[in-house]
Structure formats: C-alpha cells, structure tokens
Image (cartoon, rainbow, N blue to C red; front, side, top):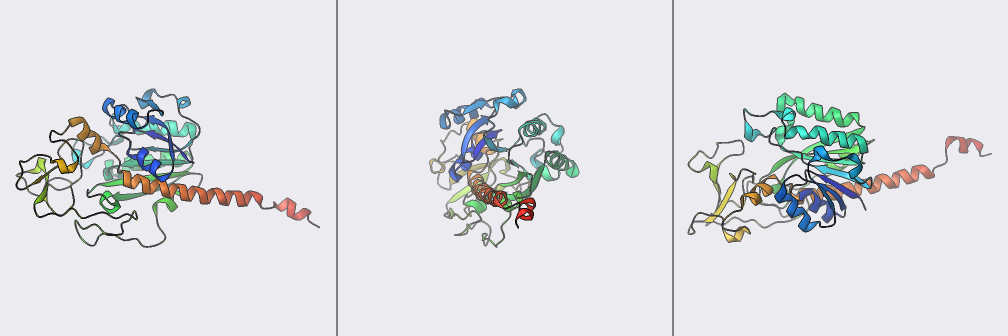
Length: 317
C-alpha cells in the first residue's frame, strides 16, 4: 500500500481522496487551527505538524512515497488581479520550502494542485521556476487542468494538477488517457458517464437558484469566473472569501438553505476551508491512477531484474 505525506492539507481533500483510492495517510502538515481540528477528528492517529517552515525533514516518514500538497494560491489567483505577487509572495512562496523537503527525501510521487493562474503568473515565469526546480530533482513532470464538474460534483472548479514521477515520465500515464472519455453535452448537464467514471444527478430545479452573491446587482459576466445567478444544476466556484454561492428557492428567505447540508448561519471558518479544499473526487481519480501506474512500473522492474545480463548470456556455452 502506498503511503501518503500531505502538505498544506487543509481539511483533507487529497487525504480523503487518496484513502478512498486505497492509500494510507501517515503524515499531515497544516497551519490553520480550524483545519487542524478537522484533520485531528478524521485522522486522530496521524502525526500532524503546523508551520511547514518549521518542519525538520526527519519528521517526515521515509515510508511516505506519495507527497501531495496544494501550496497557497492567493498570490497566484486571477481573483487578485493587480495584486498577484506569484512565487515572490509570502503565501505562494511557500512552494520553495515544499521543494526543499522534496529535494531532501525525493519521494517516488509528487502531486501539486493549484489555481490555473499558476500557469500564467509573471507571464509564465513562476511556472517555469516550479518545473525547473522539480526537474532538477529528477522528476518527470506532467500537468493538466481539470474541472470538478466533470468528476460528479455540481460545482465549476477548474484547477491545475501537476504530477511528478521520480526518474521517469510515467506521470504522463497518470494524467493522460490513451482512449477517449465522456464529457457533458452542454452547460449544467452532468453526463451519465463522467471523466472520473462516476455519475451524478442533475440538480436543476426551476425554483432553485445559485447566486454568486458578491455579484448581486452586477453583470453576470463580471469577475474572472462570472457572477450572477443560475439554476441549471451547476454552482459557481466556491472560494475562501465567502463570495461564492448562496443557494435558495424563490419562495424562501435569501440565505443558505438546509438542503445544501450547511447551517443557515454559515460558519466563516468552514466557508474558507471548503473554498480552499481540493476536490475529493479528483483526488480519488488521481490516486487510483497512481496506484495502477505504480503497480505496472513495479511489475516491469521485477521482470527486468529477473532477465539474464549480457555477461550471463555470454557465459552460456
């Protein structure tokens, strides 16, 4: 069983998804006190550390061969237009500490999640730096932008996922399929067979609306991910600023309704945690792919080690 070290763990999106795929979480790092409480509730026996800058490399189990983490996106996000410091920022710059720990341990697999703004921050220079760092450590790198709405969730959530495989480019086998896959036929419709191989019900209801409430009274096209309202079974991207979605029915008072699974008085800490979280459905899909590719690679390595060497062949009369 592959063991996982989770960095910038948040409320455990990667952790839960990878566990559902068949991995075991053995290490967590998260500085936010509210998120720490959530992690401790669900992973009470896993070692949990706070500030990544204060972690000693020796604190991280050598048995963890899958490292995952979505380092802070605030300095990269398009939502902060005009204020994007990129990897020079105090928050997104924590990538450098993450890279130092990777260089020390060199796990077999590294998985990074972040906003699509990572790709064009500082005209692409920040992403170039990230790639060069991990390439320098010996990783074959592949990346792809996924939208959570194609994985069985009713939320539009585009994120870039980067996978690094030590010593080879088998990361490409994780992120890219050799055969076509189904996608939704139109906006808001959820295909019976999604990219993740799951199904989901269309939540469209003529009396049920989702509001991007920071945009009430503004044009639907305003903002990097659009604002306004919709009732097509799809939600705007939840974000950590609390400006994402309010779900209501036309005959109800304007507030988050019980049917969303959230309390009527939305907890700010919970909203920020959910807005920053990795989509579990995507994490599970990635975990399953990593397990399959890793098993195939191990089998190939085993076959290669059992083949006679050239010297042995030459010795045969």
